[in-house]
Length: 337
Picture 1 (cartoon, one colour):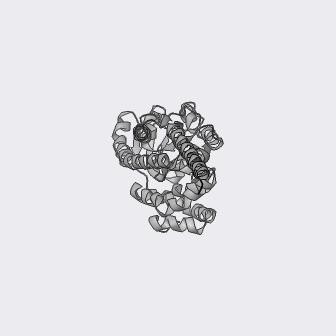
Picture 2: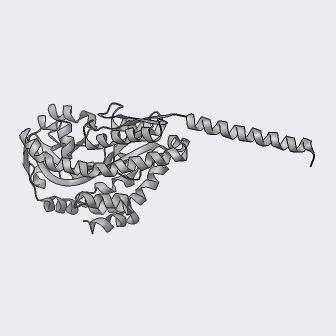
């Protein structure tokens, strides 16, 4: 081999190495600034957990990934944020499965009325067979979901006008529901005059009697101060809701694999830590909200479930979701409807 050829190969190899090193340094130097929007209050356990995740991620990546959390609809209502997330105008969002269902219908499966007997059952379903069906559908929509869903808890009905003790008490009742098809149908099936209103407008709508009631987990009722404009709370546990943490798919794929792994591992870990914290808060809030003026009652849940079954609610949604997803749900809940 000639010395000229050897020198040529050496120089080519050195150049390739220099390019690789420069590329590595550029990648290592890249800072990923991310904004996460959510409609919950800053002191809600989900937001507290996400703030902890952001701090841990910044430390673990030595400042290469900076995640800012914007609670209280600071970046817009759910519909606005979801549109911005899909367009890439924002990088991340935490969204209730009932709202996500407007884009990914399968996400509403865990909102089936009176499906889960406990939060533990819901977590097992979403971490397992049910989540395995939903997550690929989310990815197809151009978004990347974290593996673990965040627990918002069971939803209860509040009212400014009367106690809700039976399905008959909901007939004609002006009820706020989120912009979610399944939420709307639950209360329409129970005879309520259901109105879809974004979360940012609930308090004002209650205060001005655009609606007379709403439904949310106790933690939301307390942190959003709905007790100031409501008198009664029926502990119906009619729906369990989780929050999906979603990243714009193109943005997620632009991050190096090692940063994605660190980010996801920490975020999923904090989601699991926040679950019992949220359950503990919801469990303690009846006493707190009683002191703040709410009167509680415990209706017969079986009566509401029977009314839904009679209306054809379960049959309708079984057909909409399809056999594979419905079967995955019933593995955890038992037969429904």
